[in-house]
Length: 388
Image (cartoon, rainbow, N blue to C red; front, side, top):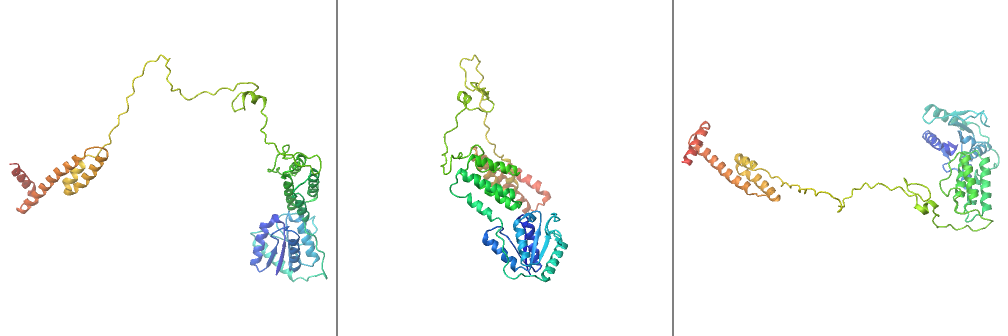
């Protein structure tokens, strides 16, 4: 089943969600993704309405004032296409031409409203169709006049009279137009007219006044009123006056005292208040009668500390030859800081000799049949014999 959806571009996000859910339910949905794309696109829209099985009109605050939606609905009725109305928001339908017709209240996350919408589409598709004989009258493309207005303000040169006439045409259309999309496009054309390099001060000021009366902010691009890039020409076809690159003339007070700075005095001939000098004066004064200060001694530089030989002594005493490791590391560190490294090797050699003698004494005592309890006595006897 082919379903044509007519909607306002303001409701595009909600209509897209609704169309995707209808696609998943088995409907073939077509709706306008490129609203107001020109005469050829409008002809494509009318062709889709003619081949649709059901015409779905999405009612909202924006669509009920849309000229395009009204033309699409009237053309679908003229072609005999069944119409289903779906209400997207709380728009008042009592004063509308189709306010007495039945409609489906739709919400994006409501399953019941989706079921009701699919049932209404199926019932409309099976209802008898009143297809007219022959070709029905095709309405012209809506808002095609906006494209014509846009082309009229994009020409290479516009005189002052032509600019004023273009502004009057756009302002008249704005007064008659209630479609929010059309009004937005008309204000875009106004902005193009205001941003022209040859726009006059009078036209620029009238555009800004119209924008403010509509409750919109004045366009940021282009010069401000009173500083237009070209003054109003004296007649049609007058060339624009070139811009002057001369710097602005200084005021009398600036001629006397230079440009004003924050915190300075004002008035003609006034002298700026000097700022206090917070930087200390380190230059000696030869005329000052001061006593010479005592010489400041330079700080003493401490030599970096080096490890003690105790580590080498203890490791060698308990582990023998492995004492060479701390001796090598400490001697290297001592060389780097400019200290003597001989004491580490002397300590290692002395303690290593003691360790060898002690290990030999213990081994000799054990070989002579002494037990471990007699080791202190045997070590003492050996030590006494060596001393003797």
